[in-house]
Length: 136
Image (tube, rainbow, N blue to C red):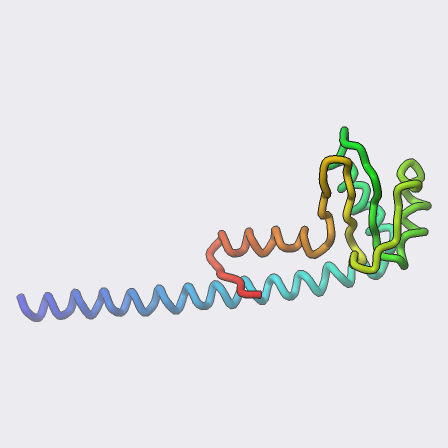
C-alpha cells in the first residue's frame, strides 16, 4: 500500500512537471508565431500601398452608418489611399502616428482603431486564449 501510494504521488508530480513544461512551450510557440506574423504582415503592407487602401476600405465598412470626421493614414500613403478610395478621399489625412497597413477613423461618436498593431493584437489575444501567454 505504501509503495502504491508512493507511485501515485510520483506520477502526480511527474504529470504536474510535464503540464508545466507544456504550458511554457505553448507560450513560447505563441510568442514566436506572433512575432513572425507581425514581421510578415508588416512587410506585406509595405510592399504594396494598395493593400493599405484595402485595409482602410474594410475599416470603413466596419464604420458604416457612422459620421466620418477623418481617416488618418501613414503620410507616405495618404495620396495613394486617396486615389484608391475616391469616395472617401476628402477625409484622408496624413498622420505620422499611424503605421503603414492601417488607419484610424475618427467618427463623430468615437474612434475606430484599425491600425495594423490593433488588428494584430487580436491575434495575440487569440493565441493567448488558445493556451499561450504572451508577454509584450
